[in-house]
Length: 240
Image (cartoon, rainbow, N blue to C red):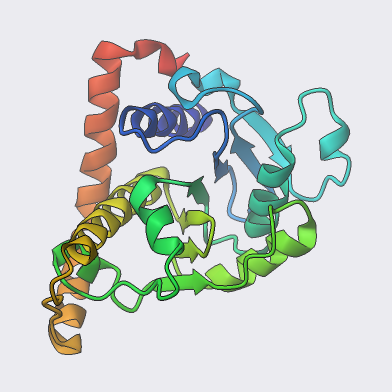
């Protein structure tokens, strides 16, 4: 089971690198190995997403105050953000944090809401948490706790002036949410750039569409399975 979890997470790093959603050797994904969220896997500091292997992932304890003193200490921002979210939001078993192009552009707007203009934006209708209180990089437990409170019981947190964070129950669910959120942001930003009025559907239609998305639970499972099938052929070393 743990081997599968490691491989699922490693595959996600490789895939988002392929999609150009990584940023240098920054950004982090983590995965709780138990329901409490105390122990979790995370990518090591300074490793490019495209090179992550299952065995590279480090196992951390959210209650270990000496973590940043260990020889293989994780990136400080990753520790303070992911560690506190796992501690305070155990339902968010898999936490993915990125600075992808379109989501970050939306996070830079004064109004970062996502109006329902297509099926992808409607997926997030009534489900998006927005942090409007950016105060610098996440270099303290207080900042991690603040972000955890902003995420609350939702899966997606648009981090104003920063990026996006997804916290879901499985790697498949987090991968699928992150992929579709960036696609939704891309459509929205292109529509804004046209300068034309948006064709916004009613709240009733948006809510129906959001519920229809929720019924597609198998989609996320199939999505990750296909990602792994591609990588099994083209980059099989992710499994090692």
